[in-house]
Amino acid sequence: MNLIKSKKRVADHGEVFTPPWLVEKMLDLVKGETERIDSRFLEPACGSGNFLVPVLQRKLAAVEKKFGKSAFEKRHYALLALMCCYGIELLPDNIAECRANMLEVFAEYLNLVDDADDLYRAAFFVLSLNVVHGDAMTMRDMNGAPISMVEWGYLGKGKFQRRDFRLDVLTGMAGFSAEDSLFSQLGRHEIFTPTKVYPPMTPRDLAGFASGETGEAV
Ligand SMILES: C[S@@+](CC[C@H](N)C(=O)[O-])C[C@H]1O[C@@H](n2cnc3c(N)ncnc32)[C@H](O)[C@@H]1O
Image 1: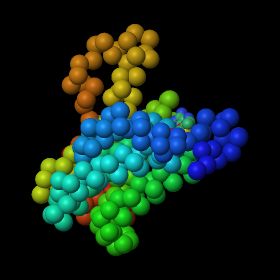
Image 2: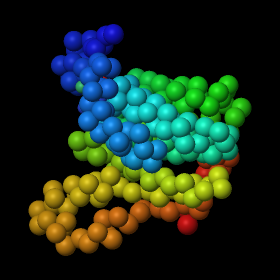
Image 3: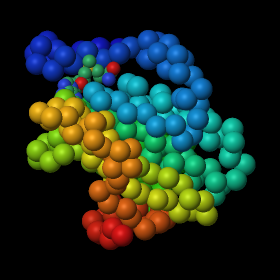
């Protein structure tokens, strides 16, 4: 396996990929969390998904173990597993590869043949939000806007909740970097206040976003 793409990219972006055997060893350090469907993982320099893909695979194995016998539950909990994986990456080719690699694993697990299935398009949409093309140091996306992170939750009966948060607010970075630390004056409830809350959505609703429909926040 090639762990670098070019010497220039190593020099410019520190792009050296982690070999699979080491990824597995590192994930084993938090084995319980990797095997929990709704534990959230954020990889702030995700490359093409060397960590996120195996995390997703472990979560899907947990879905199979718990919900493998019910097609409905299996499909929805598999989507929840995907929804709990997050990445940030600077380089456009890496971000595209990361999303594609994760989508492939997801689609293979559920035998989704193509984007005719709502779940496939819902997963495509989720990945377009969860795997952010941006700079994890400045916490801004490629348009210079603050990176937004989506908190997904499964409400049951095929419905998902979406709430958006600013990454810099979530991590408290904005407060810490201010001249007079605003952070010390912020309460937990203020830090964890979403910038947008959406009404409950089905995979079909999410698939609609992938086709360019806009969703109304509440
Ligand atoms: C050392 S590689 C690791 C990739 C992957 N996490 C792995 O372990 O295989 C670092 C990655 O971070 C990306 N990167 C570098 N600076 C970044 C930044 N400020 N924000 C987001 N990604 C960045 C690079 O493009 C590269 O893909």
